[in-house]
Picture 1: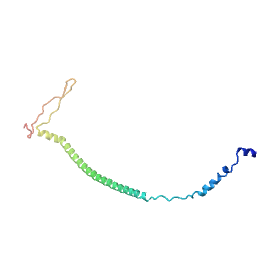
Picture 2: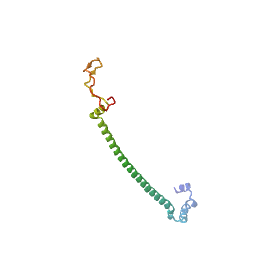
Picture 3: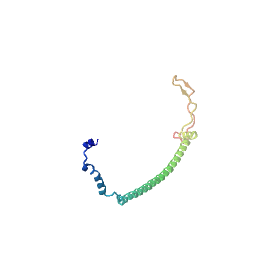
Length: 150
């Protein structure tokens, strides 16, 4: 069997052994690995810190401006509430005046002042058949002294 193996793969010293020798030579010739120093980051930190400081200052100024606007709006709202309360009181006074003028006693006095006199019992006409219920009577009385007719 040896002869057949030898016939198949002729032994060549230059072929089998040089494969092991270059590995050893390559290991011995390669420089040893070592860690590289970290890159200098001082150039990147300054703009970042400046940006953060500017953002913080802008945020504080924004919050102060917002707070001032809220305070101004609170004063405006207070003023508007006071004005609304005054207008509500004025409306209530006007409603009371209207109610006073609409009272029956004031209406009768205003009618007398215009020369009107109280009417008697009224009569009614039913429209479907034209029948009259009640007896119509003219109003009797003296016109008021303050009227234009008197």
